[in-house]
Length: 361
Image (tube, rainbow, N blue to C red; front, side, top):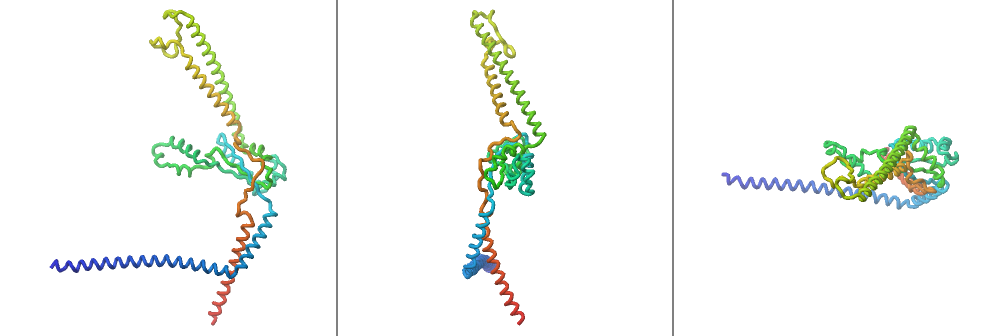
């Protein structure tokens, strides 16, 4: 009897599989049909737009030409804005103060248009101050610098923090104050204004009594350290000369173990070959001290002010306007869109009028 049941079960399985494939095929066909309908709809819309523009081509060409003429006239008679950048290096964690001062300058120039106060701060005439349109600042981002910062930061993390922290998270956590080099931009309608304001502008960037005191103390410390190193070098030279005299005196004596002059450097031992001083180690110490003095000289230059100017303003500014700020480009687009909206609303009105007549009937 079990043999009689096998063919029927096999047929049932075949029927189920056939129905499953039929359902899958129907779903796939509907999906393809949906995609095709979307493309047909998009094609129909594009075709309708092209037909609409083609029927009214002279209106649209006229709107573009009118916008170009009016925009060009406005651009020709408007003031041209120039820009220039300077790059500064902030010392003693003064980036916050610099950013706050730049915000103040920009408020005076762009928002308040307070030429009197701006002229007083920058030590320029009121007419020149009125030509300044804005101040801007941003960190000078360098991927290599950020990678080095991350490497130094990662070394000081504990084992748990090292698992959770990665380079992308570290970059997201950075603020402009974490960087040392910054780019400062100034916008003005006078392209030759920048070198007039550079000296006073740089001086006002770090106007803070605490930073000034910190700068003064740092200068004193560098000077004292340099003086100490100079004295150590002088003493080292004297010591080397004394050792050379001893060596000369020893060379003139008879090579007798009882009468030889021996100098001990460090703990004494039983090795007679190490009793005589070798001045080479002292000369190496002198070279190290001189290297420290050279580094101090570099530090004196790098830390001679709270803010160092790495690259000052150029002699003249350059055009910083972009295409979407020029009326000869934006007005034709606006006139074209306005013309399209006019015909769209006009067509909607005609459609509503016809529908209202049908409803009234």
